[in-house]
Amino acid sequence: MHSLPIFVRLQGKPVILVGDGEAADAKRGLLERAGAVVVNEDHDARLAIVALDGGAEDAVARLRARGVLVNAVDRPELCDFTLPAILDRDPVLVAIGTGGASAGLAKALRQRLETLFPQALGRLAGALHAARSSMRARWPDPATRRKAIDAALDRGGPLDPFAEYSAEFVDAWLAGEDSQKVSGVVFVQLASDDPDDLTLRHARLLAQADCVVYALGVPAAILDRARADAVRMEATEPPEPLPDGLTVQIVRGG
Image 1 (cartoon, rainbow, N blue to C red):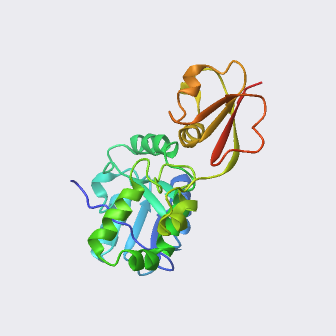
Image 2: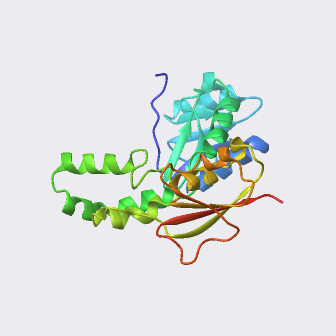
Image 3: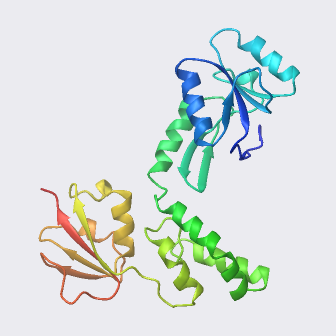
């Protein structure tokens, strides 16, 4: 392992930024998102970013002589630390670094992961944080509590992080209910008859559905993406009354 990945809290703390132009502006925006106070080289700080086409070596040397840890944009050999590509599902952060070997590779990996991590993942983290005291009360023994949390967060568990509605299930899970299901109707409009063209969200919904209502001509390959035990109904409208749980209405694209 060439580096130790860490998350640094910069809220209200100064960070030196040396340079101007597009690269410096991008780093300024990143630092401000993290709550840092961006200052120039004359100020005291523990971290610095140098975004210079020329003179980077001199600027890095000056800052290091003051005990400042430095990142030099596009100069990994001058870096004390590198800045990863970031997938943000606040408060969940996924950082992807290559040690400066290829920022493009880190970016490509982040973009691929963006399609896998639900936008609601941050809500799940927040719900789990809010439920910490309740979890301790239900499972006073730490080992038992860890096992319960691990089982809930496992693939297919009631709090599966990759499921669409896991954040809404935390209270029901803590209450010990046997079933934590979303109810109502969600529509899935097909882009094509190829199941590989399903969006990740649509694939998740089909995997969670208790009832799948589909239009005439929807191919079996699409329906096979639903749970094996889901009720399947060929109809143009959802049934009345709605069955318990989640109903997915599949609509063919126009």
